[in-house]
Image 1 (cartoon, rainbow, N blue to C red):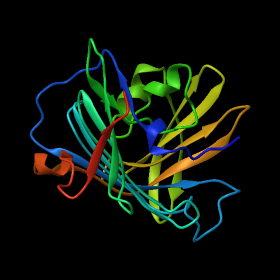
Image 2 (spheres, rainbow, N blue to C red):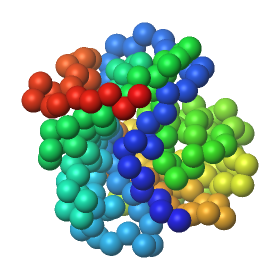
Image 3 (spheres, rainbow, N blue to C red):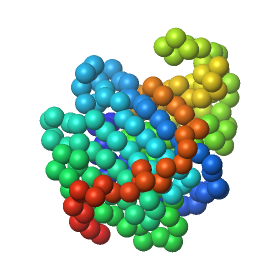
Image 4 (tube, helix red, strand yellow):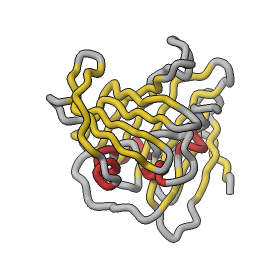
Length: 210
């Protein structure tokens, strides 16, 4: 089963979700880890995500030489733009409502069931809401982490929290369909709000997709 899907499948406009006022943005750099991912490949490259409340997100991918796509997702609900930075063309999707919450799933392969609700930047809340239990500490790279484990439908998931920063370092998934992990290279929750990040670049041609 293909684990790494297009940006079109990485964004979902779902409801309901809390959209409380926030004074800072979340910024993540992450990569996927699996036995079939080759070092130096596009699948192994680092992705970058900015998100602010449940209304704004920006997701950048590295250029993919095999497809000629340099992917960029910009979401400012109810609008989302799937942009190829190589061709400077964007597909504009408008959520019909009635609610407009941007959800970026940690595991894009899980398009059905409760795991769709496990979001980038919202990991700990999901584990706490789904009966997570404490497991033995484990290291991720050079950082010792506390570990939360949960069983969600047919999936075993684990969240590794850096014991010093208290921020996520990795989330892992195992089920009958797939086994892989998301490794956070950088995880910040204190960036100043910059709404210009969630605007389409002026040199991009936009076409409506719906």
